[in-house]
Image (tube, rainbow, N blue to C red; front, side, top):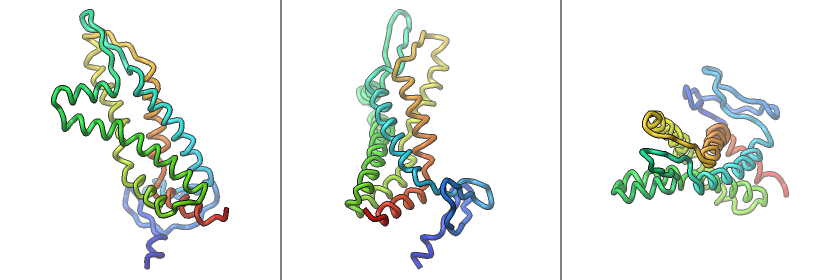
Length: 208
């Protein structure tokens, strides 16, 4: 019974149940109802995710080390960094909001990126298979917790309101943050759960 369920896949958009079939390399299986992507069969899809994870890690560090923007208001200058924003929330007494921002903006993205890297290493050396399985489950369940993209949109909305009252200069970290959001949305969040399981099963099934 469990093997039969393993061969079924549900479309994330219209929730139509499909039976998994083998497809040629570099091909994509799509939903027969809405045409959404169900899964792909590329030997190098997860390797690309690892490469982009390393890039995202570097960009995330840069985005947190340097100011995202500099604001000039009435002769006063202030710098915005992600850690400073979190610190300000706690310092002003917004402990709940500060905790949420701290988790979804700082902790969740770095944990997800490191989890991809750790999973790649475990499967490469074919060790700690049960632990690697838990990492796959974690990555699938944590897909919606890294909300740096929403944070980026929030900054843009705030800037629109400030443009008429202040002079705004973007810092180096603004570019790093933008590139990180692109990688996070276009690559890491685009990996389907079934592709993670396929990579996991294929990686441990292959001989050393």
